[in-house]
Length: 516
Ligand code: NG6
Ligand code: CA
Image 1 (spheres, rainbow, N blue to C red):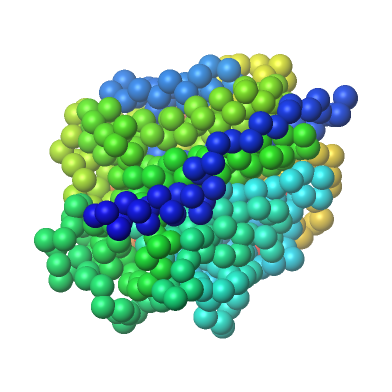
Image 2: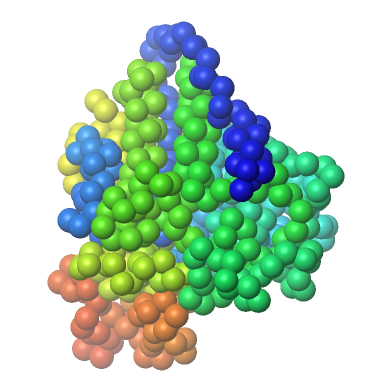
């Protein structure tokens, strides 16, 4: 235990977290500078009904609610996909992930799926003179195709090769190896005499797995997640080595939030773009002890409380540095909610009437709206009038909208599915995009009040996670305005509308782009 706590202290120090923050004088920003800083707070697996300002009553989220009360709260904003990797791919490239092979949920040793040299959200901001940073969950792969990732040397390509000036990453997810942080191109706190090896096939090293040694676990898997044990939790994949560099799940929110606020502090004098990608509330849900028991809903609720704290720390840093008025903050989530996503963490037992999807049907992985319709809040004090907006929009629109914000024109081939919805984001118009293709196993098309889900043979329910997936061999048509919960399939009643939406979807797929 002693050696563990010692190495943990050394580790925190290697992250630069122990030293008192240097006092940096607040310089005035260039007079007349119009470009706001941009901070995107990207929560993981947070559902439409998981926060107070979207109707949750059992769990308290005062910081996220404050953001909403000072900004625009969107009711019809979507992640591009119902899982993480494709959502992030689409948000950063402006291209629907389903157009590209290899953009499904990435393994922990997947190679980078965004090609260097491509126009991306961060490269667009860089071109506008912003300093760009990503802190937190990545899950878009690292390293070059056809080559082993060198976890013990330089890891590239990575975020620095697609437009970020700084990166501090959880390489994949908290539940996948390698369980280490990567800062810019290197694993943080790595002892070269204890090299890291990672495998998603045959076991590596001789460390115990959750499957063979459940007695060593502090949290047990419910499905999958039974390979190498790190910090008492078995993960997806095998790893050996890198012991001094391994993260401690309980500290993760503190570590990444400190890195995010450091980035803001260091770049306070110039416009910056920060993509702060939280680990919460993805599994394994292992919040810091100060949040344990705070929600009464078990670790999932406590992780929401921790996420709210992280959000509050970002807002506090902006206040402290007097940057709040010059900063456009977006808060949203990469896909809808899931309760049991692979660990027995009491989330199901302690749900206590909390409804992660709010009034929507389905959840993470689902073609029903809870798969992608997520909390989405925009705050820019003095520029964005607080209120609510029902405009249809998608995170994929950030590229075209920020091009507009920074006075740039996108090349025809760039961000092929990103719409300029800047006026909707700024609350100036209730009109968002004309239509949206949602992506789960099935594709769906939303246009006006209508949503069409393409027929497919997938399972109707994922029994592991207990979520209705929205799959059906028959076409589905819902009127979202009258039937937000997608209970009444009107496809047989309105075959002409089904035909019209199916034809539009086919055209948009064939065109390879949808940006006007
Ligand atoms: C699934 C995992 C789930 C989660 C998900 C990715 C199993 C059985 N389930 O394959 O736990 O990691 O992938 O989540 O392994 S996401 O939010 O990053 O897309
Ligand atoms: Ca996710």
